[in-house]
Amino acid sequence: MYLIVTRSFPPEVGGMQNLMWGFANELSKNHMVKVFADYYENHKKFDEQVSFSIERVGGIKLLRKYRKSQLIDEFVKENKIEAIIGDHWKSLELLKTNKKKICLIHSKEINHEKRSNLNKRVLKVLNNVDTVVANSKYTKNLAIRCGVDEGKIVVINPGVDPVQELNKKSLDKVESLLKHKSPRLITVSRYDKRKNHEKIIMALRNLKQIYPNIIYICIGYGDEEDNIKKLVKELNLEQQVMFFKDISNELKNSLLAKSNIFVMPSIIYKKSVEGFGIVYVEAAQYGIPSIGGVDGGAADAINHEKTGLICDGNNLDSVYSSINSMLENKKYLEFGKAAKENSIKFRWSTIIEEYKKILN
Image 1 (tube, one colour):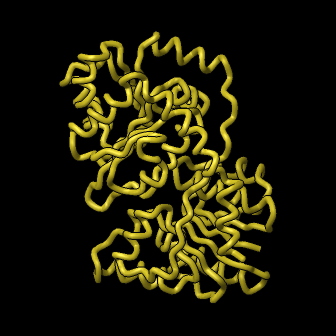
Image 2 (cartoon, helix red, strand yellow):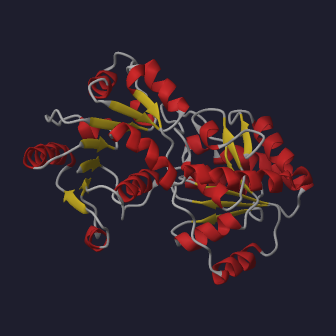
Image 3 (cartoon, one colour):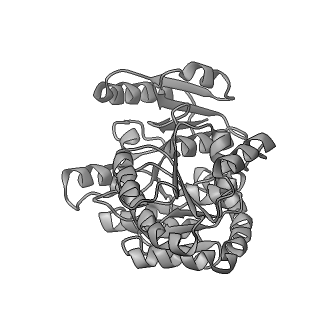
């Protein structure tokens, strides 16, 4: 049996939750799996529908961490466990068992100053597990710079499930919402500084001169939402930008499928950095090419000048010219076709084979 220890799991929504669900679900197809996850409201209905056991641990955050570790150590003593896989170094920090351990790393959570207290805690965990799984080459190099033993690190990109066919009703709804506006740019992400919505909006002001019917679709929520909306107003772009939040998955995917370019030229903001960017792959599955940032792990998801473009997100000219060059002669159609073909290698059925190599 394999134990998966995670702080993030559905029905809670988010990238980490999707990653841990995809991994647990795929692994459970051929192996016994048990998940130890943090308590989340309304989890019962979700937990009853899955094919593996999920144990939820609630309580105050600090005490929960200790209680969860105790429960896992006790469970390990009483059962035959092949390995323990943690979503985060903190998930493994308090475990006393000497069973085989694998820790996933994503970038932001290990990005602490060398010799700082947090850095020491990270290294104590990561240099004592059997394998460290980095989500991209960028995250691997970051870990090495932070002091993680290079010999322990393997790169395995996050996986995706094949997309479901979208229903016609939802696609028609999108067409009526967008009222034949074109070309169409889209970003699906949290509104935070590193996602770099503001540079896209600033580029849009100039793109509007060439493409008067251009539309930019923003799906998400977050701390920067008010600032982004304020900028749209200041630049007089209310007719060019549409905001969506709390929408169904079906509508989100239909908006994605009906767009031309996925744009998220991420930057490093304080310690926050894009470790990989699974949304680039999700867009690619619908034949939508991406523009990502040179900072972070986007280059693992986007094949520059084949499935999309990598630009300097800190440079407005770079963001503008990348969007413009992809719109010129509808180059996004060629990139989109290649992106869709390339997305197959990120399917969980393929990615899980990489995990099996280190689990066995």
